[in-house]
Image 1 (tube, rainbow, N blue to C red):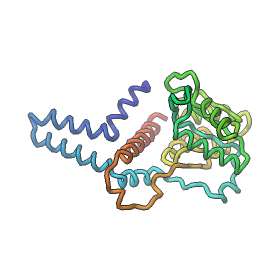
Image 2: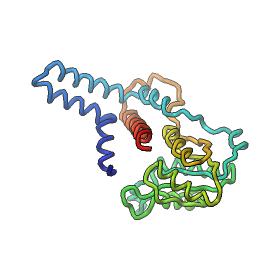
Image 3: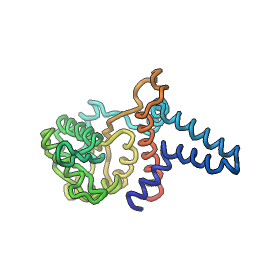
Image 4: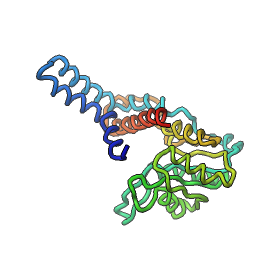
Length: 250
């Protein structure tokens, strides 16, 4: 399946596309089946409201983020021999006159660099050119690590296009160095799928998650709708679909 086709399907299976489809279907069916049409429209509007509440995304992310943050004891006792940082997207960088990493990728790089400073372990960055870009995501990551964070990655894996290939090609790269134990850096909501992918390639994985969205207490403001919460829920839907696809395809 092509990249655009996958994104199009995802757009209509996650908020807000799913709700818009329900509302549209309600209008289309309403002329012949009035009760069904009204039900679809009202359900779509209600789900759209619920999806825009921070409380909803808090609940969904609490189900996704199953791995706790690493603590100092974990780092002191780690048997890992390398840190693997997964790519999380790219940014056009018009203001820089060159492409660079996305905010999500930059967050992962910051945490990976910090782990390197704490442990002295070498870093592998992984991510290819998903849409045929001239520069791989891993190459952009390496440039950012070196120029901004003063950390030079030991390995650059730039052929992968998804999490499964991140694991597959990283395994091929590290096998010659007999490195099986790793610290795996990615966002907390993505960690389970990443952990499964790398474990099935033969790695012994110590999860190093970051960017937790579910570890804040519930507050009254979480019941006020906003667009940020809706975007968070869309990203959560992307992860659930990814888990489903991996369970079938891999």
